[in-house]
Length: 404
Image (tube, rainbow, N blue to C red; front, side, top):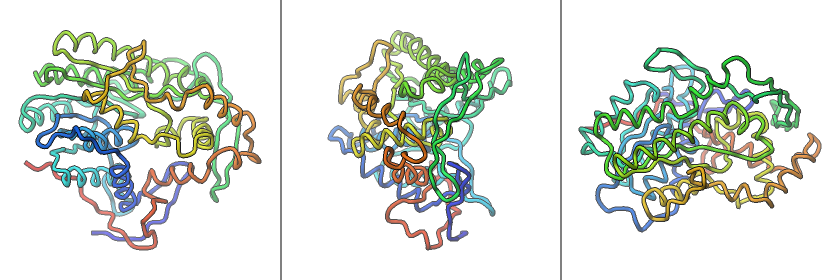
């Protein structure tokens, strides 16, 4: 097994390698931070499928589901294995650590690595539910952020883009140079053109979520009361032009429309539910790619400090609602709102004031930059407390075995 000392090397917010021990410790810390629940069943828990389980809110959904609801079932993600030149992706190591936690908790959770958009993966999951989990699925959590998707019916490949709709958007954004020195810049993003909106909706909208539900329903695998949720984000008016009102926002609107259609159908067929869950801001590998989001998140942390709600706490609250531990409370659009702490008028006014004042010279006093930079590094297993980064670490970590 290969062992070496890993030094963080990055291009902006993207790191070339990931640290296995740091990723494992991060997952263990999430597990410890997730509140216990008296309602976790002693024996077999509900059968759940988490699609996009290795990062961000999908990872939080998996960890919180294990601890808060005692789930068993299947977790799907798409990660790269280690090679001679590179470590595995961070999600690979996080998945291995999550599998260890599930095993220690006595929960039968199978981890599959592959293209969640493909019908082959849908069929593999359906076979597993049928053979291993009694032919009944109770919950499906959909948390997929991807740059492209191939339609299994047509073979056409669609690519998502981050663009405003209608006119160019000029916004502030936060970058760091090679020494980690922050700079506030203004960047302009050209508007969507051609079929950019349709392409982004095809990737990030509800088409694949609906296809998953249809495939599993066609196999007769949806249990009575089956509930499915797609994880989403609305965000602040400060980032609306590039996010909620942009191409990604069009995809989110399609996701919400899909939820309403699925909710009506599932209510009729299995007495079930379909909702979207609007989560609060967090530093994720997806969010750091969006202009303005890094600046906004750093300023939000500067306003809220420790009151910023981490993803695993949000997802613990979601599982409580999904499993009946708390009422399933939705807004007029049928969305569970886990972002209310972020979008209060007082918080948004404070962030907006700091946003207006933010320059390269002032940003250190307005945003929690130490926290933000550490959060970015922790996405790849670096800057995790308790890890000796001077010690060699084994990088050839195997993918979790599926067992019998």
